Image 1 (cartoon, chains in turn red, purple):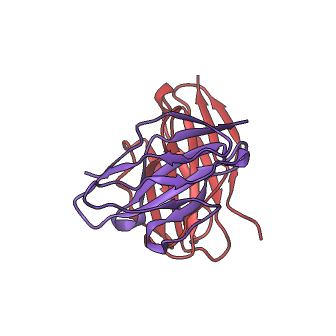
Image 2 (tube, chains in turn cyan, yellow; image 1 turned 90 degrees about the vertical axis):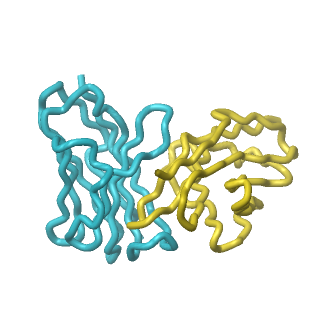
Image 3 (cartoon, each protein chain N blue to C red; image 1 turned 120 degrees about the horizontal axis):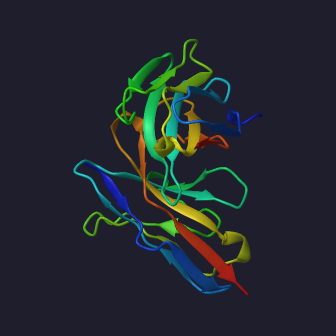
Amino acid sequence: GAGVSQTPSNKVTEKGKYVELRCDPISGHTALYWYRQSLGQGPEFLIYFQGTGAADDSGLPNDRFFAVRPEGSVSTLKIQRTERGDSAVYLCASSSTGGNYNEQFFGPGTRLTVL
Amino acid sequence: AQRVTQPEKLLSVFKGAPVELKCNYSYSGSPELFWYVQYSRQRLQLLLRHISRESIKGFTADLNKGETSFHLKKPFAQEEDSAMYYCALGVSASKLTFGTGTRLQVTL
């Protein structure tokens, strides 16, 4: 079946603009995660959804970052007033349920470049 | 706070040579450790997890709580093992804390 998909694959924007990044998890997966990967670094946790609710948003760097998952499937990561430091690859992952023993399946990522 | 350290950015070995990718962690709770791999132009995928105590593609990793390590090992490297390897620590709420990764380069 289809894996996790993310759109767009690349996004170039100007400093101060608003962007939305979309994630389509594997069908039936209740857990969804967002990570951010800067150049030369490993993925860094941003937020975890269990169903429609954000169970852990401790990784969001500041209030310019927000994510939703209104119907418990597709999720959107929203970044307001983008800054050059937001440039990174944003990864989405899903798993069948939450919990550390469940494999997280990653999407291909969205490369965000803020000019 | 939890932390994962992968001291080598690049590890270059000859085909057939043994491989050991180092991973050390810092965590006050009961750790759950994973190795993820990213092959060229592919997405990040799970290689193995300590709880399963399995061997995948010839790779094994043993959790050593005394040394707080979870090194990845393979006795004989293959060309197809060339990839980026990330060690990750599972903490509460299911989030993963990743190391900075080690690029394994297997040469003939």
